[in-house]
Length: 139
Image 1 (spheres, helix red, strand yellow):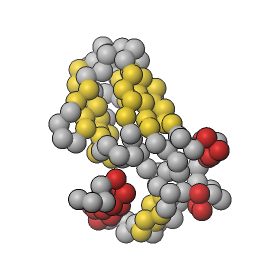
Image 2 (tube, one colour):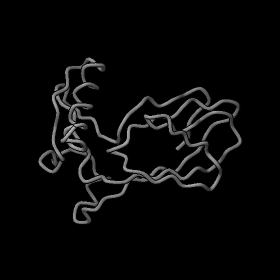
Image 3 (cartoon, rainbow, N blue to C red):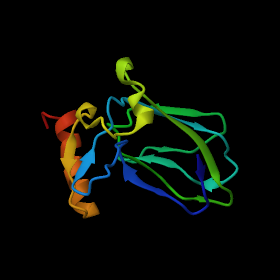
Image 4 (tube, one colour):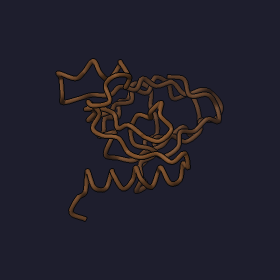
């Protein structure tokens, strides 16, 4: 994946959107994510997790984490483009092919859908509520 100079990725968990304006789909059966850093000849371009943990890319390094559980972002790189090879993993091997097929015709196999309003701040609040209830139901 090419990350052009000056292009960040906002804070997110690894979910999938929907073609419908009034819903967000949760990626089916994705449990882990990895990022293979293909170069490090740029400035900034950090992978940043909520809570302050930062990964400074080093060529050949792999970061593995629960992409649905840990909110993360990418800061804009400077000087040269940043190249990565992202990959997502599942513990539901029977559903592996769904990851590359998208959501068309498979809505029943998503972990669920959430209502979307078209207001990005409100939708983020809805997603964060789902996330908290899913991963930290006791708190």
